[in-house]
Amino acid sequence: MRASIKGLANALVGRLPEPARRAARRVYYGRMLDAVREEAQVDLSLLKRVVRRGDCVVDAGASIGLYTKFLSALVGPEGLVYSVEPVPETFYERNRRALERMGKELTAWNKDKRHDTSVQRIRREMTAVCEKLPAADPARATCDGALVPAKA
Image (cartoon, rainbow, N blue to C red; front, side):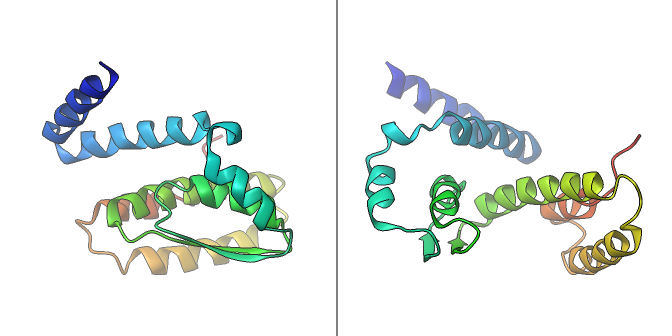
């Protein structure tokens, strides 16, 4: 029964206009990432035995970042996780979330305006990167809005 519901849901999502499809996937990926428990994933338990603090690891085919998130916790700030996702739609979704998080953290870091110069420099650099994307590219709006200061 569950498989047929999932198939029906996929068929319905496939018929949605592109912006609605992206929104549906965004919600789905976010819930999936939040719902995963280490105990339920055999691979994650195995990684815990192999990967150590300070290691450098690669998450090839990173999808929504489940393994990236877990590996980052294992290697800690001393280690590195290279996360590679070859599917453009999934790549953009992961990066949208990361950029939004970064924008919120920058805004919080600069709440007393002591770091305005640094934040403005970062925003200028980000704008230069965003301007390289075609105007019609769906990632452009995400990129443009990622580091916009939060409204008071």
